[in-house]
Image 1 (tube, rainbow, N blue to C red):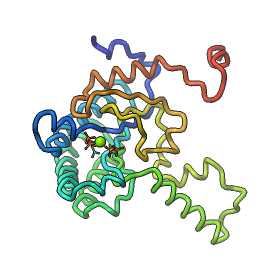
Image 2 (tube, rainbow, N blue to C red):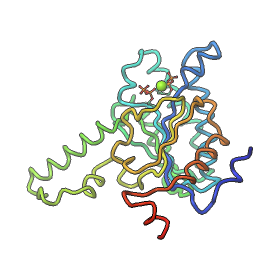
Image 3 (cartoon, rainbow, N blue to C red):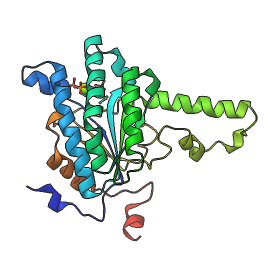
Image 4 (spheres, helix red, strand yellow):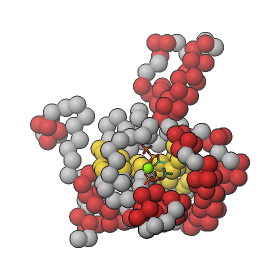
Length: 248
Ligand code: IPE
Ligand code: IPE
Ligand code: MG
């Protein structure tokens, strides 16, 4: 089935967030090293970014490396960092040509300097693009992000620039790494795991969740369109009743 034709172009989520999981298991199934799976996963990233451009998803956040992933074996962490640098340097021109703007969320300063440099160059190159914003979550965890926000807000209170009564959800949002992006309407996780693994805990408050057993290296355009079509069948209520939504 061609899922693209079943997509309603008037109900495309503005922002899709994806936990790209299952690279290691995919590689194991082929009798290869885990890192082979990460390499193949890059091809899925390329396709999904393209698919977003095709159907009009404006923001795509990809969970590429979590705070917790630092605890993996050193060889894997090093290989992932190398892959990150080489992928970004190879893909930057391509992203730029396709009108993609690159952004990063997470503890960027904890990444190797070569990564930081490559990321900065690509972000500068693509800064004026508007077709799709690709947000890489790198050395990211939601609890880290929220902790940083709390520190910033506390400092403003301590210095007398902010009153406690003025702390509200909007102010908290403005202190998150995602302050320039709308909240995702749809969160996809591949590989059959049904957990959130410290990803965008605040921002996913009202997102629709889509879980698939497909492993990330096998998650290509048709799988993405299938997820979008599934999302379009959902009724988003935001605390209201079904009747209220249908009569609106
Ligand atoms: C996701 O695939 C990629 C990263 C977390 C970097 P995994 O490496 O977690 O693959 P599995 O879950 O072990 O199969
Ligand atoms: C989540 O995947 C992080 C990324 C996809 C980058 P993991 O594979 O690290 O998640 P857990 O540890 O199994 O929950
Ligand atoms: Mg995993």
